[in-house]
Picture (cartoon, rainbow, N blue to C red):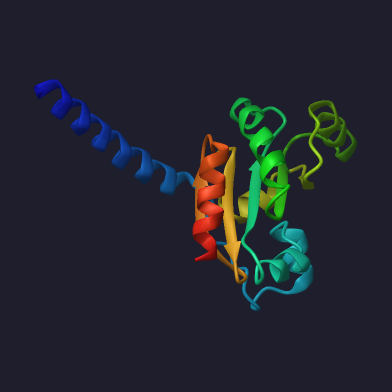
Length: 164
């Protein structure tokens, strides 16, 4: 019985530390409101006005990833799957030319929307620190932000939660 109490204590401590570190490393809530011009939104933040408009109907998942990222190779399959249900905008961070990224996506069977952030400026504008990173936008505002491995059930749960 004592080992169960110890296990629960360690699990709780891990969950708290994981949540704090995840929140600290996640991209910041970028200025997505009407203060940002259409051109600035699409070039600086990597989010098109159409995506922002779509967020008024349903949550939009923004996924920062890279071809060189090992965790992204696990998570991108989940992004491909979730893109069949929810709108997804992805941003490939410092992953080469547009042709190289498209070839990578073709080789892995990905067809989600992607913006090429060759020099990392978009990710820097969001003050992102680690790939993969995720942001959920609802009604033109960031409602969730997180990093790391994202199981498919977790993505569905987070997007469902954003609709409430």
